[in-house]
Picture 1: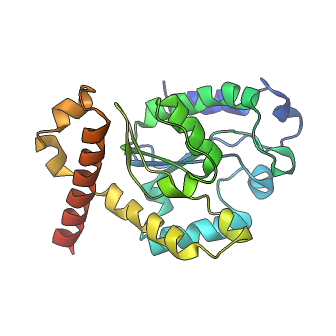
Picture 2: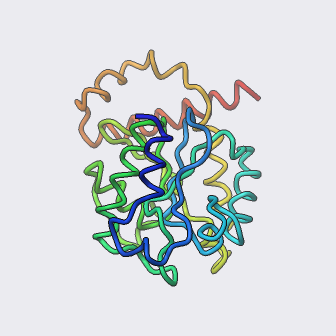
Length: 230
């Protein structure tokens, strides 16, 4: 299926009550061959009015984070878990997630990114559930941001949503540091095809302790590539 066909269905969607209060339904945007797919929770007020991803106050923070990471919007693909704005920026209801996640699943299949980058607690929670990874609490969320999580068939890299810095910028330094890792993840990793653990990883034959070990190997190899390119 082409992304244009999916977007037509998204724009016409009336499967939940959110269609009654939205102005625009937001489709994903960006590089259709991107290695990185950034997934936000839902469009905000400004995004709803203009029909574009990450504009307004949170968009300014987002652009600043990308600039610090030396990442251009044209390099990545951006989308939302929920395609319509949530009234008063409330958290998404389970029924809304169950309906709208079908569109996200189709986007993931079409784009087939190397990394899924969920932004914020609720999106990361959904992605972890989808790929049968252990759950976490809101208090534990900061412990997994900026870390690569390996499932049997996906690589996940949770990050803090840019809007969080609008309410509390005390942890801005760590957020900036984590976003800078996106540049490392965007590199072509020629070494991975020859990695002896690759076959076991793809076949789902690694238990959790080996997955943690492979996680360390991935990070070391990413850093090695950065140093050799600089």
